[in-house]
Structures are given as structure tokens and as C-alpha cells.
Length: 294
View (cartoon, rainbow, N blue to C red):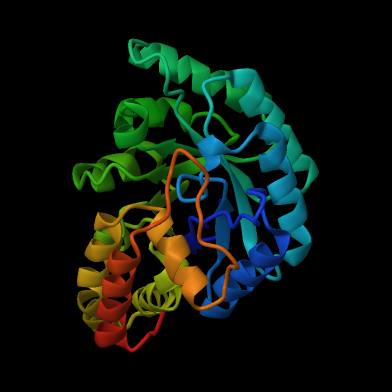
């Protein structure tokens, strides 16, 4: 089982040449560790994983491992090539990453649910590292049903799942499907409902900027102080909604660059930088709500 808690879906800082920036990555990981995060996901959706080459993803996790402190690192994998996915699983294992986060193959939208399940099984059968299955139908066009999750959970290599669908019904259905394996919610507005149902925590894009609050909410909820956790959650819920409504990861990167956690907030094309006015408005909203200045 993957260690429970809050895992930022980390942005990928780039240097002026557009290459991953290891110095900014080191600062970012220290920012997450200081906030109390259990770990971080690299090269996921907020990490612009689909814009990174397989070698860049390998190098990103390789360079981050000595900088991780006490964080567990998970490598995001988004590809329709099972061979590429397996290669990245092997690289993650060789570098002693905790797990990989494997998105459904997303190009052939006509593929059947059974064929998608078989694709995952090919990777699970060949992966030497634990795999979190990633459901994000808004990006992939593929919905991983509870029935598919239950079948995949029979594989020893399947460590659990992340669900970013935003579907409340999946909270109960996925838990029933995969039992005691790890479950992480991607839509942070559902965090308390997921924790109440026995989920493991959140792999969160908003945790790039709100990690301290999300970690405190998780700690209090699981420690028995649910009233305090619920109060804090209601305070940051409008912020979570605002962050989720902004173009991401550009806005998260802009905020982190404003306080010097990363050197440059520019994403890689085809994504573009956040609107400075919108970033300023969000920064003001965060400061007014919780006193955190970006």
C-alpha cells in the first residue's frame, strides 16, 4: 500500500531554455516536505507529463530522487504505448521511486472497455514497480468503471488508484471495487467525503500552493479532530474551487514563481503562461482567506 496523505501533483519547473530545472525542482520538493506532504507525483497532469519525452520523465525522477528528503516520489505516465509505459515503469523501479501513476491510453477513443482493461493488464504484468491506475476521463476520453478497477485490482502490481473524474459515486464504488488498496482523490473538493469513505488522501494539483492547509486537514481528520478539519476545509473550499477554475498548471506555476519557489512560471507549448491579472486576483483571494501571500 502507498503511504497515505497528501501528494502534490507537482508542476514541472523549466529553465530559460525550456528544459526541466533541477534547482527549482529541489526548492519545490523542499516546499512540499516543509508543508507535511507524504510525497509528490512528478510528470503528471499538473507536471505537463504529456509534453515531456520518456527520457525527460526518466531524468526528472532520477534527478529528483536525491532531493526528495522524506517524500515518496511517484512518476506519472501518460502514453498510449504499452511498451513505453513498461519502459518507464522499469526506469522508476531502477531509481527506487515509490510507484507510477498510469493514465489510460487516450488516443484510440473507439477502444472497448475490455481492450482498455487488457492494455492495463499488459503493463501490470510487466511492471516491476507498484502501479496506481489513473482515472481522468475529462483528459483521456476513457472512463474506468468500478468493474474495470475490480478486475485490475486482482493484479498484485496494482497498488491502487487515483480518481480525478469528480464523480461522487466513484467514492463508494471504487472503495468497494479495490478494497484495502490505496485510493487518492484528484478533485480536492471531494477530499473529506473521500476520507470519510476510507480513502487514502489526495493527489492534488491545488497542493502546489495550498499544501500546508490540505496536509493539516488530512492530519486532523485522520487524527480524530474532524470538527477542526471540517472548519479548515470550509475556509479553503472557495480557494480550491477558484484554483480549479483557473488554467492549470500555468496558474500554479505563476503563483510559485511569484514567491521564488520556482525560477520561472512558463509552461511548455502548447500551454501558455497564466494571465498576470488573473494570477494577481487569485493571489489576493488566497491572502484574504488564509493570509498566505503569493
